[in-house]
Image (cartoon, rainbow, N blue to C red; front, side, top):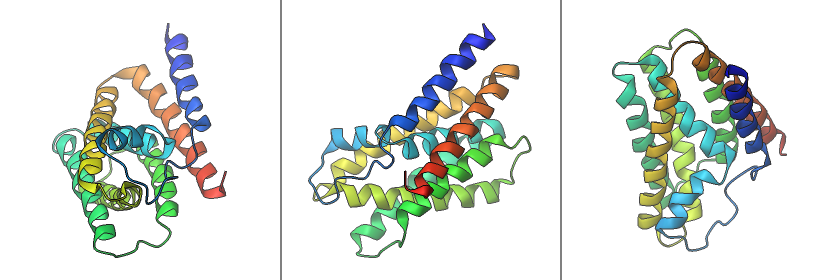
Length: 192
């Protein structure tokens, strides 16, 4: 049974590699609420990072359960705000790719990170993700942002749910998830 669960889970994670390397292909086109809901699900970069934040929050426990997802959501909006204000995050896609790698490392570690350090990393990840989401939004940022915030919160919840598993299941999932983040993050940085 354990082998079957791990096989299904690892197969699902590896299939993420087949998704678009970057979910940011329609900059400047008009997008609405449903597009915002779907956007985080269309690229492995967003999907992995957002689940990883919830998974790390669950593994850390306590205040981290609400603090890490809350920081991510707030800073993602701040990143979108930077775009609206006309400011530029240079190499935002590179930062997104690095966030995939770093998220994998956070999940892989068995020791807890200090909450301030974890929160700082999450804030940095979210800033770049929010910025690239806003670039995609076109003229309807408000409804698009509501959609991507909703999906982001749900994906954090999925990560928290996975993180509440115990024992061998969590260990195997954590290792496979970290490997998927490494493969996808490295591929993004290599331009695949």
